Image (tube, rainbow, N blue to C red; front, side, top):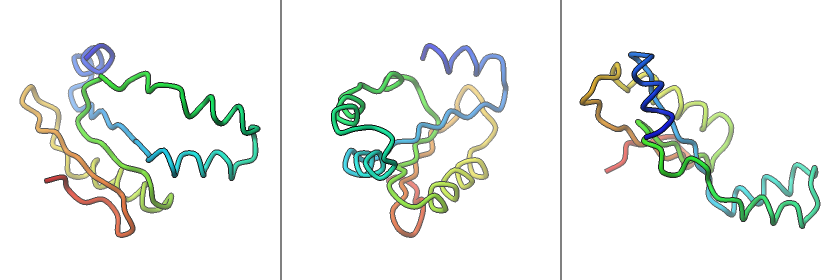
Length: 103
């Protein structure tokens, strides 16, 4: 959509990856950081995703460890063919053992 379409026209091999996380994990990570008080965390959790409607080529569910998230991103980079007008979307979820292709 808006942003990714413009970039895709400029960069032939662009792959747009959305990284998401469950609300429970997101809340836990924010609390663990200790940089914000409870009210600030609650406000951040209520904030809508500004790019929710953007077209993506891949999505990574980043509920696992840093290593699992990195492995999922590398898997997307390695398995997503060069961008063409008919590029198929790739989806991955990170749970324990790493990213797995979507059904």
